[in-house]
Image (cartoon, rainbow, N blue to C red; front, top):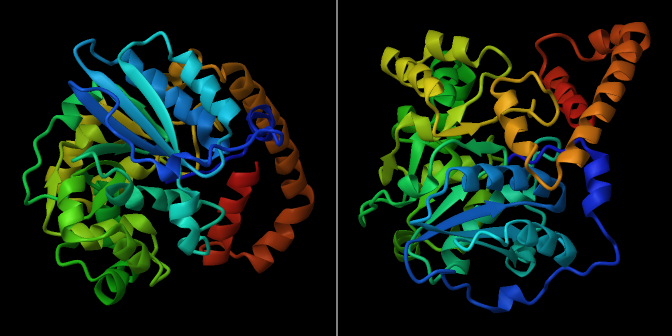
Length: 373
């Protein structure tokens, strides 16, 4: 899961040191929240990401159907009871919406030192690998990243039938495939480390319909976590899932995971290096996205003018965190302007010397700057 956060104001609003986190849920077995038409949805988040999850939930509710019941579960290690109740209260008037939190601290304890890219990915990205073991009463669940917006009833996606052949359903990652087609370095990584039989079928893991029953019959969560810990995978658990589930994936229509145009050249990369069929599918899906995915460092809560950013703010305006989100955006703009002045006058000469254009160090520095400012 992508968990970049730059908004200290939001953190201050939702982090209360006097609160205690619910440590009882790991001892319980979660049962479906509804006896009929239960649409099970999973998120993974830390306390910093909760405001963005709240915006996603607004979009889910906006496109929900009264004929369906939405069973929303959030895996976390640090969201306090006070903030759990705050979010639950906001949606309490919807009789077909259930929001529950599950503390995965105990389950994650053996893997607390697992490899992450701290400036871009945090440990929460691995939580979804625990789903087959933790959610034993569920046969399937729809996992959603927190940096998305729903534009259609997710029940349509959840109700797609998965037979025993499939471990999951997901959209092919057309952007990744285009990069793979154009990069010898990426091809070498796939051949020597990831060892995928069909790289052209690499899927994006931000929206996944997990066939939990099939996973439990095939591979334990412990095995997946151990495999994840075996190597410093480029895209962490996404690479792991692609390796584990290869040849057992039901590929979805691209409209269910439309990645935004970041950094204003994703469209260019895809149209140049992906197949004509894939490029056409991506462009057509952009016109009528069922789920928009802000997969990249520039999030709409950080930059108002990102691709599809206006849609995100429409739902943010309905969120309980709207005021905090606005304040954080204004403060970030001030910090960004200060940073620009500093870089232009003082830092840039040294940056060009020690972090030359095209170097990996410069890209890493760029990612760190995105996180902080």
